[in-house]
Image (cartoon, rainbow, N blue to C red; front, side, top):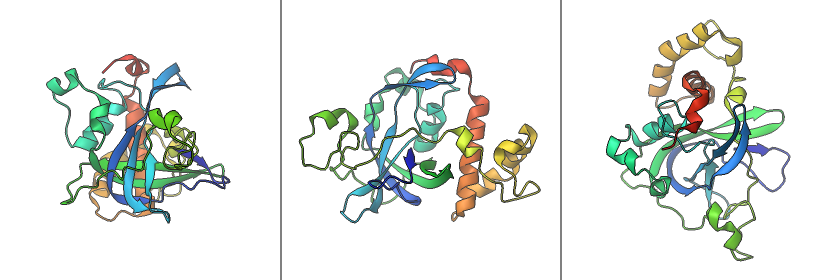
Length: 243
């Protein structure tokens, strides 16, 4: 989700690590990509942090095409969220609507680029808390916003949380992440050779992800390396494969 920092009516979800619950799967929307127009959707999560008015902070996922192909971006996201691959039987009748109300443990980080702030889900894992987070019931789903009565706090785009709905930061934005470890310290991810990035993925990333208290720099680099891995495995045709 990309938010202009000079917007006076909206603040991005704060950086956060903790429980979350899925409250929306947005309708498909045609967007232009490097491979031409594609239909995309997003997951919306309420977090365990609340604003001054008592409503939970929300974060929007990166956009996904409706594909569970092995090279799709959706497949590894769901695998991390559920902690496993979907079974063959589950994929036969997979419906994203079934994920509404499903809990998760997420890490939200901020990316800064050209005077704008990106609130991104850097990590998502299964929720193992004893008291799972429940939807607040205050969020108005995107598909219901046109029918939302005036005065209930639901903006034309923002549902129950007035927001500017903008595209999420992509791998190019995360490529500007600076390396803060090793011999490449001070360089940006996009400045490294594939072999250098691969070395970080193999040698640094597993340890960083196992760290219970990663620093903000760690979170940003983890997100950038995850994006790099996803980009390496993606193929132009993966967006054309149905669930």
